[in-house]
Every structure is written in structure tokens, then in C-alpha cells.
Image (cartoon, rainbow, N blue to C red; front, top):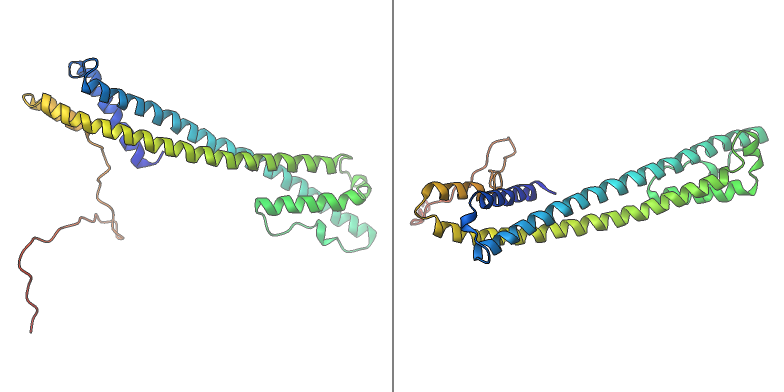
Length: 235
């Protein structure tokens, strides 16, 4: 949840607190209670989707990084062993068994597929140099896990986007309901300026209208020019 959304959620929570402290303004089946119900629902929806967004982003990223690391570890071991196999055979190492510079997810999978194809032709020299007899199958399984994590990461990004959209929708509904409460509370508290001031304080979105900072770190405040007759140009 971005900062602006967090500030709006905090405002809705304060509105809920004001209503809890002043229940007489929100009797059952009244306009106030209906608007308050929308506020409460908006808070619940925002909090639920914020949790979903956080978990989706974190879990997908962690799994992708972990499985990617496993694949790269396998490739480094095989590439190092391949250099020694080539040295013992008195030949140059096969370029297909060297680590490429491209390290995107797609490039890593392609590199792993090439390694699997090449070492499967004759895995015994690598096994004699200490690799597990299952090293080719181990790499295949690592690649499958990495590809699955990549797909889950994509699904996680979709879940993040969906949760973000739900947050925006919930906040919009909550703010609209708060506007209804603005009208109601101004009317019913007109004889109680202290209570009206308390409502306005709770209803304010703290920090949303802070002046933006200029390049030198100074506050930039827009000053509208006063209306008046245009100044004639100098002749």
C-alpha cells in the first residue's frame, strides 16, 4: 500500500473511532449508520487486500530467487568440472558448457537446457571427477522448480495488481461515505463547535497536502497572481 493510500486508510480508521465515541449520531437504519457501514467495510477490504498484496509479492519473489540460485549453483559446478574434463582430454572446453554472460530467467533456463543436452551425451567423465551419478537429473529437477517458481511469481504479480485494484476501489467507496458523513456531521453539530472541530480533525487526511519539495530541498508553494489589469509593455 502506497503512502497516500495509507494516509487515507488512517483517516477512515479515525472516522470509525469518532463514530464509536459518538454513537448517538449514527442510529440504526439512519443515513449516518449506512455511511458508517460503508466506511467499516472499506477498512476491512483495504486491510485484507494489503495483507494479500504483501504476501503475494514476498512469497513469489523469495521462491524465484531461491530456485534460481540452486540452478546457477548446479551450472557453476558442471562448468568447472567440464573445464577439468577438457583439460584431461587435452582439448578445449566446449563453449556450450561455459557460463554465458546473459543472466535473465529465460537465458538461465536456455543455458541449463544446453548443459543438460551436452553432458547427457557422456556424463561419466564428470561422474569420475566427483559429481553425483544423478547430477543431470538433479539439474533437470532444479530447472523445473525454477520454472514453476517463475510462473508462480507471475501469478503473484497478478495477485498484487488485483489486490491493488481492490484497495483503490475500497478507498474510493470509503472516501465517498466519509463525504456523506461530512454533510451529516456539519449539520447535526452546528451547535457544538468543539465536537465539530473534533470531527474535522479526525476527518482530515494528515500529510496528503504537504507542499512538494524543490530541487534545493525548499518547499515549493504555488502563489496565484491577483487578478487585475495587465501591465502594459514598455515601449
